[in-house]
Amino acid sequence: MNRILHAAVLAAVCPLALALILTAVSRPLGAQTLGAQICMPTNTALVFDGDYRVSMCYTTPDGSVGHAESGIWSSQESGLLWFFDRGNAEVLVKVLDACSLPASQGGTGHRWVFVAPVTTLGFNLQITAPSGQVWRHTNSPGRTATTKSDLYAFSCSGRPSGPSGFDLASVNADSRGITYANGHFFVVDWFFEEVYVYDATTRSWDYDYGFDFGLSPWNHDPQGITYWNGHLLVVDSGFVEDSGGAIFAHSASTGVWQDHFALAVDNHDPRGIAVAAIDGTDYLFVVDGAAGNEKVYAYDAATRMHDPTYDFELAPENTDPEGISFADAGGVGVLLVVDGLDRKAYAYGLQRQPSADVSFDAHNTDPRGIVQHDGVLYVVDGTDSYVYAYAPYGLGATQADSLQPVLSAPLSERTAGAP
Image 1 (cartoon, rainbow, N blue to C red):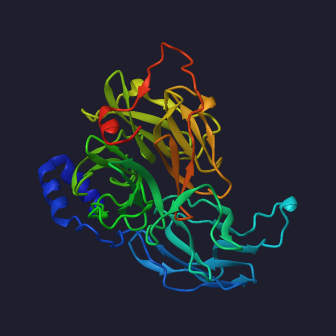
Image 2: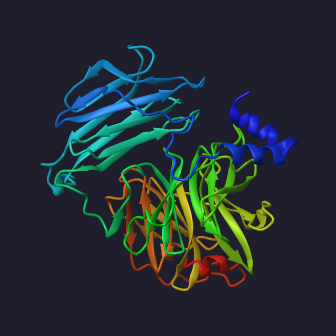
Image 3: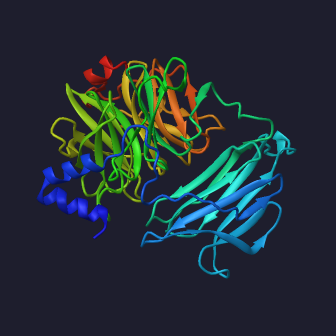
């Protein structure tokens, strides 16, 4: 029996035993060990023009780790990778030198990257520039891998010049969500299963705060983070195999894991979590990205029960949700849902409010999470290791129907300095 299924059985028959086991095996603060389903590539499968090096590892269903190889076909700008059989290509990779391409012809002043995998295996693909900058594409085991294109992958003249924001720590290279509380930004990393802490004033990795912290070993597929009532809540899409995900609660002051609870069974592909109040009751809103089930689920934060009263479908064009957060848009509370394909945030007041939508800068090609602080929207990029800032945010959205529920920030958020 694997560890995740074993955890599910324990949760059903003996919650206290599970809590004791999780407490015993939780990693100490500051740990940076890799999760059981994550691999680290150690090979160099391809070297493209300009010394851009491609490495890739994959994980089989039985937990074995392998490394991709090349040799089927390659040029100075593109190549094919294979896993098990040289005649069976698994991934097409392209790194194109578009530095001399004028803007009138689509040039962006960057080298372009295109990756097209055809697999359901978990993998970690990395492209390393001569400067040491790493571009990454990952896939969770059991999911059909998606293609990825980035016209701003590597700048031709140093750091991309997007909106004012801040760099993440070099190890925080696969961020999946961001939140704010008590003068700090908290960024959850999928690859290292770690939460990194940044001082909101200096915009720097905060060693003095006392901790970055590792997630519970059962919290191995983190997809979003939010703050509520003294806790950092991390949503996970893989706690129980082939069923719903879970929310793990950590102390916001110590990082210690405290407890967890399961999501609704249909909410099996959570991509982000937010908190907002309706008529004085705090709700957790979890956005789901499963094809055909793009919607937001509502949970009473105190009872932890699913409340379908406040579930809502996403807009038809909001097909790739990658994060969610509460924000104040000109005095109207909205839930902003990040879309990875459209590279924008769609606004919902439990109904569509397009006047409060926000489009992202062209450099912000892999938006993974969003949070508002002091009227500014901060969007974390999963590829760039960078947090983009969009300010000011307050487009004067209106409450379209006074009979609709009104979203507001919970008291616990306001006392923590959130909107």
